[in-house]
Image 1 (cartoon, rainbow, N blue to C red):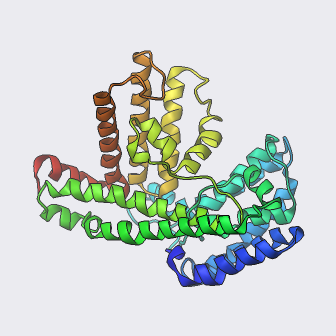
Image 2 (cartoon, rainbow, N blue to C red; image 1 turned 90 degrees about the vertical axis):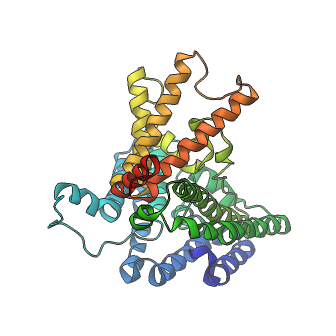
Image 3 (cartoon, helix red, strand yellow; image 1 turned 180 degrees about the vertical axis):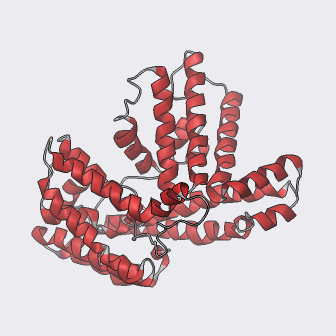
Length: 397
């Protein structure tokens, strides 16, 4: 975790935030671009990708240069989207896709030295957002340095939240002037994130480390749901900790970043869970996948297909593997079933306001169980997950 290193705080965050706060307006975007450049190169060399990873800085420079061609209705915007998808396809999905073509294991196209550039899943989605919103006229272009500052803003580069340019640009031009309040709240939020990470998420790994084929086969069946529940809690506290640190770090600059988690495990239906879990991703998938597919404006069958397609995309975004596709399908099927149930009952697609206290508790328990059962497909490959469920239900070894 980059966020728990002294390098992050003392080489990058604190010096960059102070320099940004004290600089004149024309220099602020350049300071963010420069600090993001140094951050990307340093942590690529020391943690992710090595020299080749550091060279991937060229992707940002290329994107910032090409982005000057993006205009309302311009075909260059489609080029930008295609390039961002190409980056993801090559670095994240090449071996997975070619492995489907050559399933025997003798894959002549396999990239043996494959690696993921630092934050590739997040910065490519911001590339796509900007290109599409420029095409539709939903955001102004900004300057070269302002856009470079946006895509190289290092607090959100590694694990989000996924930003929107039209939210970031006004704050970049007029950051909050209240140093004292921003630093108090920012540092408090960072400490909350670090506490979540070290005191809860890391502690839960003593349970989740057992979610492997050998330990599952040797365990008593009643232990398995405890391990899976521990993973459900671990991934929440781990990921929300990253978001806390990123949001708190941005606050030191006087730049607001939207929330990414809002008590998702307290929600009483699956649609509400996804409106409160990794919210920046949910909003992104809604705006750039679900709505372009037709959203809820098409026939019933298409609506259900759109819901499932979005969750398959979510699964594939989280990881290049068949288990992530099944995890996405699990949630897509659950969301489609929830929607169908609401339609049959003549109720609103969202909300459980009409339920009694007992009904709301039952809805919460069902949602919480469904989400946590699905984590089995996220943390384990499909053969191991299959053995997990067989052993859980039937006590097989």
